[in-house]
Every structure is written in structure tokens, then in C-alpha cells.
View 1 (tube, rainbow, N blue to C red):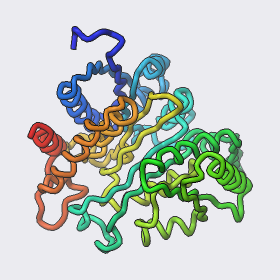
View 2 (view 1 turned 60 degrees about the horizontal axis):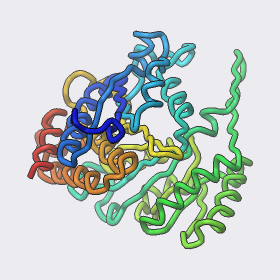
View 3 (view 1 turned 30 degrees about the vertical axis):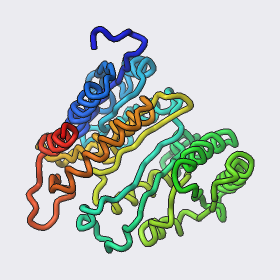
View 4 (view 1 turned 90 degrees about the vertical axis):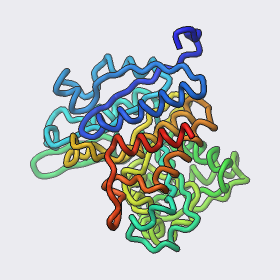
Length: 361
């Protein structure tokens, strides 16, 4: 790596964060460095604090040094933020503020969450096996608008959170969904609450116009969020790309984790206009199991696949990682959250070793 010209090096900022985020970040690094060696990529890893750990060390959930590192990086891996030590909702400084600010400062407005149940994990879900046949969903969630970022106010007797969207915010995330649908089954379902909310009416009209003008070959349909919540569980195979605003996407994609057996199986990618992406497992900091070596590393490892695909344009490497995870699980290397029956649950390290073994076969 030392002989690689500086302009071809890829800088990856690693923000382990809190709880099991620290543990799965180590596993993601192992996979990324293995793939870098295998595919001739020059990867430089630099670490920085975020979330509760950064509050304890710097008094800020997103220190300026961390933000500057992420701005310089070609990709960012984030483990998780939050935990009981910082859980007071009335606290002036909270771990989640760092994550929200990071998304905004890096211009990451589209969050991708793939949902692809593995056949060998169907026993880990409460759903009938036939419901999970041919399920392959990609959530495209708007990430920097809506209730999470609108004006808010609270006093002793009332509180207000404001949901705000602009035409340009809706158009840019709709274009992401349209472009991704072209490489899939060419269907986009836009989810809103247009029978009640003006922001949803804007969302529906803008997405309709955008697809008519730019993605006429893509089948677009609109569904209300309450109906979609039921259909994602009862008829998941009817969906291809799901396009949705911030709050709805947060809730629905977590709900959809039941299709895969566990939140520990879900990676995510937060993208903007360029190649820089923030890659983060969906499962959160899981403080109840932090430190005991049982966290599921598969979501973090699948984040490496998304990084290779979207930030480094290396589809063969991404596919190789995804296939190795699937083979490891098929061969029975199941962590506690996806183990069933009398299957022995493997540790975090053992699961990663299983993936590495299959990558070297």
C-alpha cells in the first residue's frame, strides 16, 4: 500500500461510537482490509469519536475534528450512537444530535436500506415461509428533512414539531429512487399520508411529476403509510423500491427487519450527490449486550459491501462480501439474535471468521 500514489488512496473514517458499535466496527474493518488486499485497493483507516463517547471525551457528540475527518474521507463507517448513560430526553446534548448533524453537514440526503431475506433464516422470523418468497426490497428514505429537522418548540404544557419539505428536497431523493429502480425491477412505491398531510400532498405531486418527466419507464404507485405498513408484512414481495420521507422511512424500514429475522442483518448507506457515503448498521448500540462478544456483525459487514458498491464502484467486491455472508449463514454460523432451535449461537468474532473463510475459498 505504501507505494500506491496518494491520489488513488481511499480514506475511510471509522466512527465506532457507542455500545456494540465499537465491537462491530472492528469486524467491518477486518472485512474491508481483506477486500482491499484482494482487489488491490489502497485503504487508509482513521478513527474518531462520535455520539456518547464523544460527549464524554469532548463534550460534543460531533467534535469538529471528527467532522473534518469525515469531510476529507471517501467513505465513513459509523458503528452506533446512544446508550443509557446519555438517554435523558431533556438533556441539552445527546448522542443522536451528532448523527443528525453529520448527515446534514455531509449533504447525505438519501438513506438506502436493502431488505433481502435469506432462505436459511426463515425460521428466525415469525412469518410463514411462503410470505418471504421472492422478497427483495430497497428502501430509499429522505434523510435531512421532515419532522427530525423542522422547527420545534416545547413548554410545560405543550410541544410542537414541524414537518417541512420543499420541492427540491423531494425531487432529489425521488431521482435517487428512480435511478436505482432502473437497475432492479423498475417499480417504485412512494409512501405518504396524502389524505391528511399537506407535506404528503406536496410529496405525491412532486414525485408524480418527476417520474413522468425523467423516469417514464418506471412504474410508480402511491400508497398511504398505514396501508403500506400492513402490506410490507403481509405482501412484501409486491414491493421493489420504496420511496418515503424521513419519519415514515425510519419506522417502516425497522418494521421490515422482521422479514430478515433481526435488525442485526440490516445495513444502510446514506448518500448525497457525490461518492461519499456514510455506512451504518441499522441495529443501534444495543447496550444490553454490549461488551459480551455476542453482537451480530453481519449488518456491519454488509455495510462494507454497500461501501464497496456505492463509494468505491467495485461491484464484484460488493457481491463477493454479500455472497460470503449468505454462505456463512447457510452453513449455520448464527449469532444469538438469529439462532433458532438447538443451534449453537456463535460469537461476533466467530461470525466474522466464517465470512473471511468463505472469502478466501
